[in-house]
Amino acid sequence: MNSFFIVGTISSLDTLHELNKNPQKLKGCDVVELRFDEHMELSEAKDAAKEISQHRPVLITIRTSKEGGTWKLDDAHRFEFFKEFFEIATYADIELKSELFQHQKRSDFPSEMTVIGSFHNYKKCPSEAEMNELIQQGEQWGIDIVKLAVFCNKADDRQSLSNVLEDHPESNLALMGMGPEGLETRFSLPPLGSKFTYGFLDKPAAPGQPSCMALAQKLK
Image 1 (cartoon, one colour):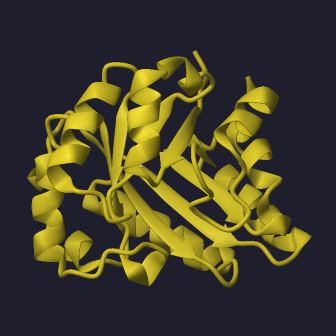
Image 2: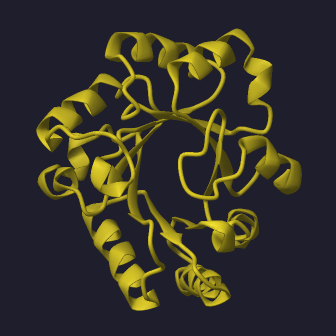
């Protein structure tokens, strides 16, 4: 079994329905990320997510507009939507900087669910000290996997991600760069210990994100 998973991101219910009809198209995808913030209708999304979970584990993400998503309602409402997927999803993603992270406890999520604490910066790569602080913050809360997705403007940014990964050999991290300079990290960091790498199943969900198939062809 791979020590890392390739996550296939879905932003459209049409794509989800198509994959349910043709699950062979999930080849190379270990986990399906359902981006509920992309205006998916709850009842329809739940039924489709339940069906796709028979083929792959589901990661539920309800990304706020502050970190690249489209969700604009308050976090109290967002947590209620998360709860709708507790019996379906294997993974849930919440932002380390969100109010939901500040107000909810790890025990508010099912113990068997893997909770991902994420941070996104679409302009630059934070310093290694800042990234280390985010990892510590997440682990203190009880996060199972800390995900840092940051924009790489130069080669040094890719090296910073590698350094942070190397500095935390006992931590469960998913680190990746965005943008053209960051593309390489989606292929290079998983073999070094990054737990997840993300590719799209319908359209890129982040700058420079490759397709799930492109990741699978190179990494598997």
